[in-house]
Length: 446
Image (cartoon, rainbow, N blue to C red; front, side, top):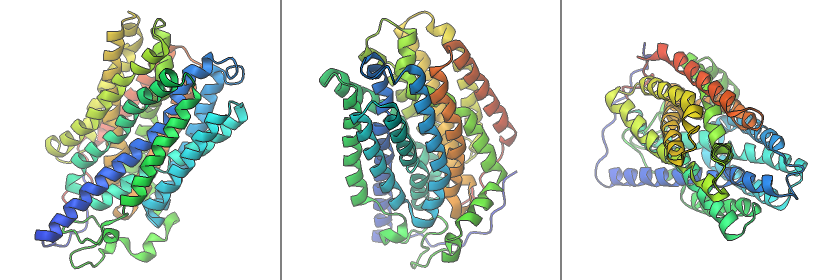
């Protein structure tokens, strides 16, 4: 049953220059925040690309063994999970800008340290910083987008916007792999080139981003709650006193049963995605041992390419076909994901590159469809108006705890056990969401 929302005040639509200005700002915020989160991936994926070189480097692989790399991934993801619970709340209190810029600076610094040293303790410490820095991106940027776009557009707009992380996962590995192994023949170059890319994105973000319509000097006719109503008066949902009560806001969000369901579902979904994201080249190399390093890096592009299309399709379906219901497309995507994960080992046993590409594409399509809907659109929709960042952070924090398993287990388990476990987890996630099939966001009529 849909949650009941208080009546929304009538707002006279803006026309002429005011409307055109608002549209320009929406496009600008969409572009700069999309680029910001995609940019984070060029540092995040550097370790995945570097693993192939590290494992073949006698100067590094004595300390950085395959098991050690799995533990380092788990350390990174634990820090990432901790940051998710924190930075969304900080974005609600201080605004997304300061949190995201701080995260970018931390991510760049950590990547440079990892490129300079192969000592186990240095790598581990840098990955803690990297995890905390990377987690400063998603929830604050979701809040930033939610401030500029109303409920009725979020399925399509945030679905399209969510292609940022799929694109990052698609574009970063071949770019970093080409620089590291084709140009410099050094795994260290992956970290430095990723840091340089994010540095360029940081400059653009600092120059063009604003936290809200109010900061941009516009009054939008259908601005989300908490942003300026016509005439420049703030809407009542985000009073100054409320904004400062971070702990109370977090407790309020924790009482939302749908937010908790999304968090549990995301916990079960995330291990499969992160196993392929962080270990994709290694997993491909295990199943297709005749491929060289560049080939092993390129094959998982299928996973990311399908992932770019998935958020666009699922967002459109949720708005148009399912009338702003976010659960049905999630459940359908999770059903497809369960089947693809269960069939991964028997299908790839053929040793065919084409079959590997096809299976990874189906997994990418289904996992990114469910992922984008749960982590962004649904988290913002079902969070309170004044706590969108907190809700997105909580859901993503739960998912990031699950992602720890995705980073850790590939270094210890055989492929058969690994993908069977992922298939069972995806099935449980679908069963958790199924009872909420007809549920709509509390403000779906906005």
